[in-house]
Image (cartoon, rainbow, N blue to C red; front, side, top):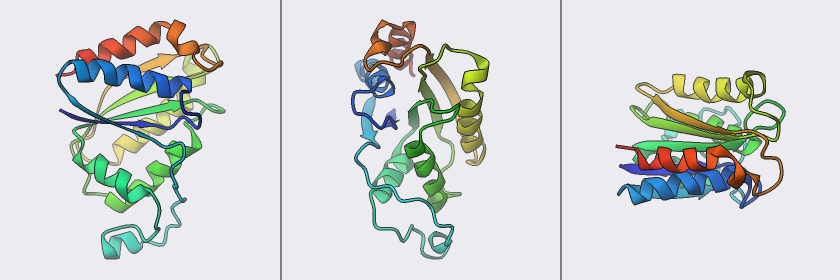
Length: 178
């Protein structure tokens, strides 16, 4: 399986970024092709709703998104890793999701896996906005399937995820992929 992991942590080596690596380690050990893209440091402009992508087949903005969209189209499974900020996904991931309009409706039949970290304790209330936003994204793309989710609560300090049960869960989730 061709797996694309998108780490949207604004800090390299942040908790969601580390959790992404752990998932990828398990998937790689199970024989899958694994590629990771860190959004930190990437130039990702906001969608301007110009709709030129519908006329020209690609976004007119000259930034790093074209490369990311190509990788998303090639992937069988897309792993979206995000920290929770103010009950929602990271701004970096939301900007990328909005820019996927350039490949709508061509991106079909993808599997998705979510890796979510939050500084607060893990609760339905603290996760609701993030999960709703991610599932709403999937609902826009025909045949998309949510294949799983690992959530790590109480991971505020950098590296805290390594002491959380989610650390092992992410690794095992990657290992169990078929």
